[in-house]
Length: 544
Image 1: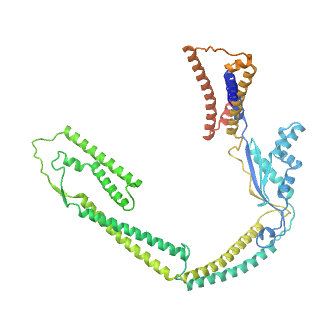
Image 2: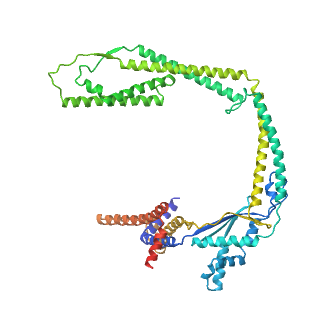
Image 3: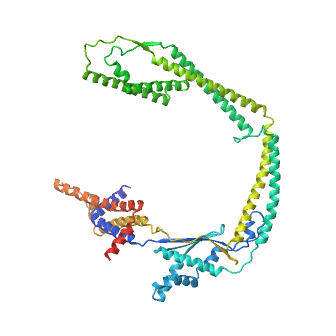
């Protein structure tokens, strides 16, 4: 393994000696390749979708209802044989004036051969919808070719054909009348059943047992919420009772009582701290101090308290810079209402209202559970009978709706202006002149050019290194001479030489990076929708 690594290392070092030749070759190859890619003409693809049916109208309309003994012929082969014959292609070329660009029989043969290879027919016999596609560098020419292909195909395939419209419509009308009678009877039975069991009909949320289980779940959830609300209310009342009604204003003798009490930032932070404290108390009812939400809120409270402290220091600093009159008499300490007690009392009142609402909810869920448990013997039978009635009704309704659709298809087929031959044709998507080109994929080709260019440069460097080999390392010298190497004299590079080597490496890296940046620029313009091909073509047209 070591010897293989040494051989590879020697090979790369030898190829590195010809790096500039390889880089120049890669730049030239990529420049020429990218220029060729940008000069490739745009391709515009025009397509048309047609529907082919070689059977009578009765068979496709009754598919899935009556026995169908007919098999559709290979319409892809029929379309190809009819359309892509040489006489038809020659007629298309003449009608679209493509033959005007040919001067010799050989050129005309090549034109017909290109038409035959460029025209594609895609489709399956499952849905009988086929798509004709043709690409050209001129969008109007592409549309003209597809138009003429459709015209030629329809002119060559349309003829006299017998249709069984009357038989089909008669059969459908009889079946629709029979299923309509069944559907009316099923609707009557379902209506009478619902009228008899109006109080025990299942709801939209599911069957009886699923509703009973859901009611038990809701009851347990409501009871848990009620218990949590009662505990929270009691805790708030205990905290409020333990607080004093009034407290001494700690800032009454302070130099800045009015500034701190009226400061909106401090008031806002204190309100947030009170709210977070209440939320932490609520969480501690169900979780521990290590819960992520509790830890996060505790940290937020600490941050807010730090902000309040910083704000107070800022206010004190402002007061120190603007001192008040020392002759003014200071006010004595005063007593104020305990704001924390008031807030706890307010929260306790809210908790009382919440508990009352939860009690009402628990009572309602208990009533629902008892009502469902009383019907445990009756409701399942009603649900089973209702399911049977609904199943019969849905079967008749589905079949009746399907017959109505088939009848509408019969009316549409009768009124449509279509062919009356063995093969009936409908153009469901006519050809249109494309506004944007569909090819070539210049981004893919540009990527291939970059890879090929770098590969050519690297290969050329490797070939040159093998044509003019050099001794790179001590093992190479020992292998070539067969003599022992007694010593090695290393080259000591001067600062100027090392600087030149760095400049050379920087220049090589910049050139290689520039090549890659040119490719990235093409990718960016392609993603942004910039038509570089159109700009280059317009410049060439102006020069020419």
